[in-house]
Amino acid sequence: MNDAGEDRPVYSLKQFKYNSHYWILNFLSRAKKPSRILDIGAADGYLGEILKQQGHFLVGLEADSQLAEKARAHYHTLHNTDVESFDFPYRGEFDYILLADVLEHLRDPCGLLRRVVPCLDRGGEIIVSIPNVAHLFVRLSLMIGRFEYRDRGIFDRTHLRFFTLASMTRMINDASCRILELRPTSVPVQLVAPSTDKGFFAPLHELHFLTVTLCKTLLAYQFVVRVVPYERQGDRTHLFGEREDTRPGGGR
Image (cartoon, rainbow, N blue to C red; front, side, top):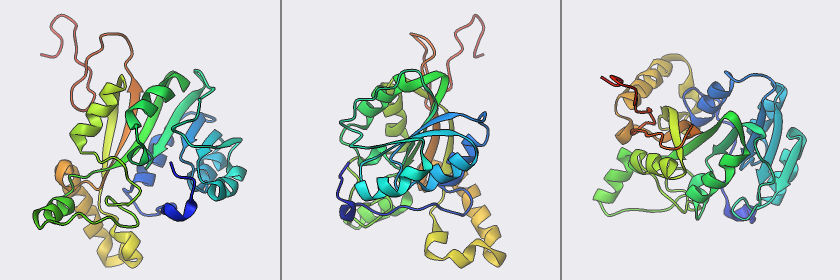
């Protein structure tokens, strides 16, 4: 991950429903307090600030020096480092590891997943958010011969990897992990037009999200998933991580 802040988009907390931050915080709202959380790609600490106020113990990693300095106050420990070269000193210490909009920026995202799994305590989870390159907008753009990088979003110019639902699931399985829960997000219209988050337009956003959940491979803007390591050698999974029931008569 590039340490040059000017080359990276500046992310901030999204306040509206059903976005990636909404689902990450929703997942963590079920966590015991305090939980030990490793936040990889902490940015300026916008998630860390909320989680620390909730009483969690936080360790952060951030490559950008300026963002790391802003984030430092929200973490008990913060490493200003490139995650792809960082030698994780933790073993069995964390209840949760956050990879919020991180894996698509890496040269070897599956390799990172493999390296962070040993940092999890027994029963720990990894929470990942990742853009969907198979979104309808991308497909239509390709149909007319356009694939133009932008400052943020699915075409973010700092993305090194692109994922569909199937390829994301395959990467997670290749890292000897499985998906426990998946939530899609809808296109963040509210970032462009914040006034539509309330009043007359609010029910339309609810309808939009319902449509996305019914056709997530085509309409999801991002996928947010809870991921766990295989519980034992030989554990087999299907597309969304449902474990195959190998007991006699199971899965019938």
